[in-house]
Image (cartoon, rainbow, N blue to C red):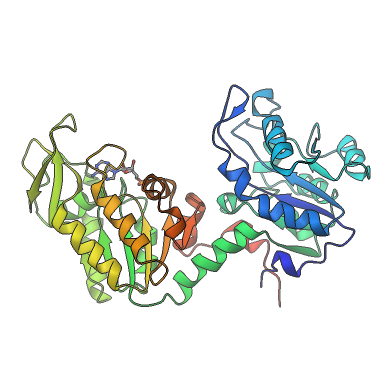
Length: 392
Ligand code: AMP
């Protein structure tokens, strides 16, 4: 059992909130604040109920050393503007100076300095975890994107708290991702795309017993097509995964799951220019860069008939028009059938493809987890989730 924020007693307490504020920063300016903004509802709710809020995050890869360019100072500035309240940036994340700042009643919101300035964070060092835990009485984790890391602030420190639970963002991820593994509404259609089969093997294997239909597009489809003996021209292929692709097709058949591959393609020349449509096989000097129109219609039909759709990986080189058409049709079809069809989009590129269509508000859940989402869907136990589990 994992406690929800609403069920935690925060009255007169100091709360340690682990967030993922690993935002892109260029010359001291945050270029994309989405990760900070999406944690604001959790922050606001804690502020309504708790005495003091400590916010902790990593930023970049400072390799266990203090490096000013990885300071959370720009994040503090953003929080001050977003919350319209004072936010103190502590000079460190542990130690007596930090404790003094946290215990000063004048400081309601304290942002701890980058956790990764200490090498002990990534090593999940017990003493470091204890020093972090000493700062607060309640532990709340809202950093789903880092839940697959066994780091001190994500895994080790939770054991020192009697009161701990999930923030609103992490809770939402669990609410939408857990039913996919437990009991997906059928027909349950999974669409996989993106560059490589190798990244998706675990997900395919774990989901096969649960899916009604598996649609494969993107560059990864060409490894499957080549394994079937279909000419794929100069399309991206993982030569060393041909046998695996054949095995996965057999496994799908054994589960009675139709595994649908593209029947036509939008191809380009070696410079990824001069688009054309090719049925079936791909000519020798051309690359498959998107699912073709017939395939796109077939995939869209499957979406309309589904109750639940999981989509991970664009079905074409969506960053370059016109090879975005397949992914756009899928995003728009999901939006048109919202909310009847429950849609879960996983992975940064797929979220970007959906956002490029402007339909993010007509998708049930955009999972921000990246690696964490894939590991969750592979059925692996995530250290950050395990750390929050309590016996009910
Ligand atoms: P992934 O991170 O594995 O989900 O891969 C996403 C990337 O795969 C995106 O940048 C897509 O543009 C790219 N991609 C999808 N289909 C193709 C394709 N047919 N050829 C080349 N790149 C592709």
